[in-house]
Amino acid sequence: MRALPSAPAAPEVAFHFNVAEPLRHLCRLLRKVNLAGMSALVCVPPGLARELDQALWTFAAEEFIPHASWSADALLQAHSPILIADQAVHWPGAQVLVNALRGRRSGTACGPAPLDRPTSSRAG
Image 1 (cartoon, rainbow, N blue to C red):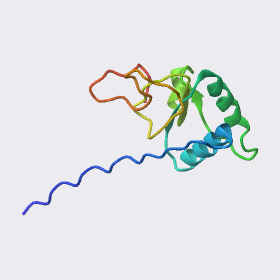
Image 2 (image 1 turned 90 degrees about the vertical axis):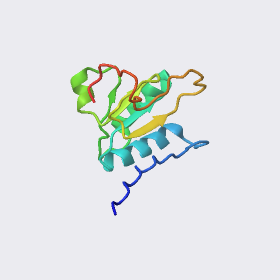
Image 3 (image 1 turned 60 degrees about the vertical axis):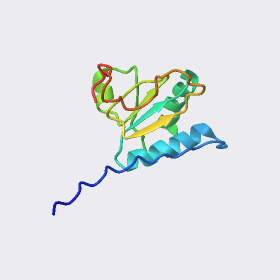
């Protein structure tokens, strides 16, 4: 008798809301992602994207959380485990998705690209 193939693991979903310091919370979350050796796509409003970029440079004096802006050149993006986008985008290489965009009503979501849709020219 053949063994049945195991079902793929379901993705883990966590909701973080009503946090006292959202920027600091994002930095701590992304530090955990980085220490776990994972990649992350962070979709945030434009103002928060700039603040997050600065905060990740200065969050902890003894460590650097590697990251890049979605608009950075392809080489920098390719070597950055954390990408910060100021809009909804797709990145198939993301293992973790942080969606802090509010009021998304369109069919476009922030996160890994569905298999049946073309992706951007972004190297993954």
